[in-house]
Image (cartoon, rainbow, N blue to C red; front, side):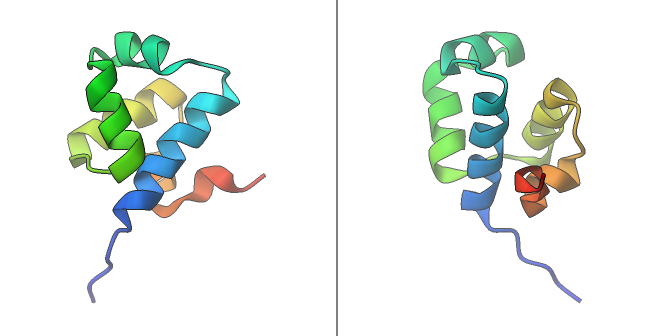
Length: 75
């Protein structure tokens, strides 16, 4: 069985988590050690490796699966 990941959902999840903490893109980029340009690309396109998803999961204290599946939007 194969499960496809919607990359846009990954970007939306990361953006949602960032905004829920009232963090700017500058702050989050500095926190994870990425450029703001790279963070914008991740949020807009959802283009991220599993290592990148794991980094954000650690920062936001959620599972990588929550980011990949969009479960961060659930109350």
